[in-house]
Image (cartoon, rainbow, N blue to C red; front, side, top):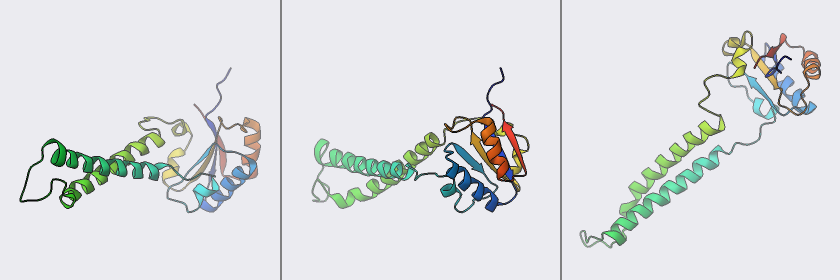
Length: 177
Protein backbone atom coordinates (compact mmCIF):
# COMPACT_ATOMS: atom_id res chain seq x y z
CA UNK A 1 0.00 0.00 0.00
CA UNK A 2 1.46 3.38 -1.01
CA UNK A 3 1.46 6.14 1.60
CA UNK A 4 -0.75 9.16 1.04
CA UNK A 5 1.09 12.20 -0.29
CA UNK A 6 1.50 15.32 1.82
CA UNK A 7 -0.77 17.06 -0.66
CA UNK A 8 -1.26 18.28 -4.20
CA UNK A 9 0.55 21.35 -5.40
CA UNK A 10 -0.34 23.56 -8.37
CA UNK A 11 2.21 25.87 -9.98
CA UNK A 12 1.19 29.28 -11.37
CA UNK A 13 3.12 31.96 -13.24
CA UNK A 14 1.43 35.11 -11.86
CA UNK A 15 0.35 36.24 -8.40
CA UNK A 16 -3.11 37.10 -9.75
CA UNK A 17 -3.62 33.49 -10.87
CA UNK A 18 -2.50 32.29 -7.43
CA UNK A 19 -4.94 34.62 -5.63
CA UNK A 20 -7.79 33.50 -7.89
CA UNK A 21 -6.89 29.85 -7.23
CA UNK A 22 -6.76 30.41 -3.47
CA UNK A 23 -10.14 32.16 -3.53
CA UNK A 24 -11.62 29.30 -5.53
CA UNK A 25 -10.18 26.73 -3.12
CA UNK A 26 -11.60 28.61 -0.15
CA UNK A 27 -14.97 28.84 -1.88
CA UNK A 28 -14.87 25.08 -2.53
CA UNK A 29 -14.42 24.48 1.23
CA UNK A 30 -10.72 23.64 1.47
CA UNK A 31 -9.28 24.85 4.75
CA UNK A 32 -5.85 23.19 4.97
CA UNK A 33 -3.83 24.82 2.21
CA UNK A 34 -0.83 27.06 1.87
CA UNK A 35 0.73 29.28 -0.79
CA UNK A 36 4.39 29.84 -1.57
CA UNK A 37 5.59 32.94 -3.41
CA UNK A 38 8.91 34.62 -4.22
CA UNK A 39 7.70 37.92 -2.74
CA UNK A 40 4.81 39.09 -0.53
CA UNK A 41 1.49 39.12 -2.38
CA UNK A 42 -1.15 41.58 -1.19
CA UNK A 43 -4.43 39.90 -0.28
CA UNK A 44 -3.12 36.33 -0.38
CA UNK A 45 -3.74 35.61 3.30
CA UNK A 46 -7.35 36.79 2.92
CA UNK A 47 -7.75 34.61 -0.17
CA UNK A 48 -6.43 31.62 1.78
CA UNK A 49 -9.01 32.24 4.50
CA UNK A 50 -6.43 32.88 7.21
CA UNK A 51 -7.77 34.38 10.39
CA UNK A 52 -6.08 37.00 12.54
CA UNK A 53 -2.97 35.84 14.32
CA UNK A 54 -2.70 35.55 18.11
CA UNK A 55 0.93 36.75 18.10
CA UNK A 56 0.21 40.44 18.90
CA UNK A 57 -1.58 39.27 22.06
CA UNK A 58 1.56 37.36 23.08
CA UNK A 59 3.61 40.54 22.64
CA UNK A 60 1.11 42.54 24.70
CA UNK A 61 0.94 40.01 27.53
CA UNK A 62 4.73 39.70 27.59
CA UNK A 63 5.06 43.48 27.79
CA UNK A 64 2.52 43.74 30.59
CA UNK A 65 4.21 40.92 32.49
CA UNK A 66 7.68 42.43 31.99
CA UNK A 67 6.61 45.93 32.99
CA UNK A 68 4.66 44.91 36.06
CA UNK A 69 7.34 42.42 37.08
CA UNK A 70 10.08 45.05 36.76
CA UNK A 71 8.10 47.63 38.72
CA UNK A 72 7.22 45.09 41.44
CA UNK A 73 10.87 44.01 41.69
CA UNK A 74 12.02 47.61 42.22
CA UNK A 75 9.21 48.47 44.61
CA UNK A 76 9.83 45.35 46.70
CA UNK A 77 13.60 45.84 46.87
CA UNK A 78 13.48 49.59 47.57
CA UNK A 79 10.36 49.96 49.75
CA UNK A 80 9.88 46.62 51.50
CA UNK A 81 12.97 44.43 51.62
CA UNK A 82 15.81 46.92 51.93
CA UNK A 83 14.55 50.51 52.32
CA UNK A 84 17.27 53.15 52.09
CA UNK A 85 16.87 56.85 52.66
CA UNK A 86 18.64 58.28 49.61
CA UNK A 87 18.65 62.06 49.50
CA UNK A 88 15.38 62.32 51.42
CA UNK A 89 13.36 60.61 48.68
CA UNK A 90 10.37 58.52 49.69
CA UNK A 91 10.92 54.76 49.69
CA UNK A 92 8.40 54.32 46.90
CA UNK A 93 9.76 56.86 44.41
CA UNK A 94 8.06 55.83 41.19
CA UNK A 95 9.86 58.24 38.80
CA UNK A 96 13.16 56.49 39.49
CA UNK A 97 11.53 53.11 38.69
CA UNK A 98 10.47 54.10 35.14
CA UNK A 99 13.70 53.35 33.17
CA UNK A 100 14.05 49.77 34.43
CA UNK A 101 10.30 49.20 34.07
CA UNK A 102 10.40 50.38 30.46
CA UNK A 103 13.46 48.28 29.60
CA UNK A 104 11.96 45.12 31.10
CA UNK A 105 8.69 45.77 29.27
CA UNK A 106 10.49 45.89 25.93
CA UNK A 107 12.79 42.95 26.74
CA UNK A 108 10.11 40.53 27.94
CA UNK A 109 7.69 41.55 25.15
CA UNK A 110 10.37 40.86 22.53
CA UNK A 111 11.42 37.54 24.06
CA UNK A 112 7.84 36.32 24.43
CA UNK A 113 7.08 37.43 20.87
CA UNK A 114 10.04 35.49 19.47
CA UNK A 115 9.09 32.39 21.46
CA UNK A 116 5.46 32.77 20.37
CA UNK A 117 6.60 33.07 16.75
CA UNK A 118 8.65 29.87 17.03
CA UNK A 119 5.65 28.05 18.51
CA UNK A 120 3.21 29.37 15.89
CA UNK A 121 5.36 28.34 12.92
CA UNK A 122 6.45 25.08 14.58
CA UNK A 123 10.17 25.78 14.68
CA UNK A 124 12.65 24.22 14.85
CA UNK A 125 11.66 22.03 11.93
CA UNK A 126 14.70 21.08 9.88
CA UNK A 127 12.74 19.57 7.00
CA UNK A 128 9.27 20.10 5.58
CA UNK A 129 7.66 17.69 3.09
CA UNK A 130 7.03 20.55 0.65
CA UNK A 131 10.77 20.62 -0.10
CA UNK A 132 10.36 17.18 -1.74
CA UNK A 133 8.16 18.65 -4.49
CA UNK A 134 9.75 18.80 -7.93
CA UNK A 135 11.01 22.28 -8.90
CA UNK A 136 9.86 23.80 -5.60
CA UNK A 137 13.08 25.85 -5.51
CA UNK A 138 11.45 28.07 -8.18
CA UNK A 139 9.23 29.46 -5.42
CA UNK A 140 12.15 31.76 -4.59
CA UNK A 141 12.61 32.86 -8.21
CA UNK A 142 9.53 33.32 -10.35
CA UNK A 143 6.77 30.78 -9.60
CA UNK A 144 3.74 30.77 -7.33
CA UNK A 145 2.53 27.56 -5.67
CA UNK A 146 -0.72 26.54 -4.01
CA UNK A 147 -0.64 23.31 -1.99
CA UNK A 148 -3.81 21.54 -0.85
CA UNK A 149 -2.84 19.38 2.12
CA UNK A 150 -4.14 15.82 2.48
CA UNK A 151 -5.19 16.28 6.14
CA UNK A 152 -7.97 18.63 5.00
CA UNK A 153 -11.38 17.03 5.73
CA UNK A 154 -12.54 17.76 2.17
CA UNK A 155 -9.38 16.39 0.53
CA UNK A 156 -9.69 13.48 -1.86
CA UNK A 157 -6.78 12.90 -4.22
CA UNK A 158 -8.84 12.65 -7.41
CA UNK A 159 -11.31 15.39 -6.50
CA UNK A 160 -8.51 17.76 -5.57
CA UNK A 161 -6.64 16.92 -8.78
CA UNK A 162 -9.76 17.67 -10.87
CA UNK A 163 -10.35 20.91 -8.98
CA UNK A 164 -6.76 22.09 -9.44
CA UNK A 165 -6.86 21.12 -13.12
CA UNK A 166 -9.87 23.44 -13.62
CA UNK A 167 -7.73 26.36 -12.36
CA UNK A 168 -5.38 25.91 -15.34
CA UNK A 169 -2.02 25.82 -13.54
CA UNK A 170 1.29 25.25 -15.31
CA UNK A 171 1.39 21.83 -13.69
CA UNK A 172 0.11 19.80 -10.75
CA UNK A 173 2.39 17.56 -8.70
CA UNK A 174 1.93 15.24 -5.75
CA UNK A 175 4.04 16.26 -2.78
CA UNK A 176 5.51 13.10 -1.21
CA UNK A 177 5.71 12.68 2.55
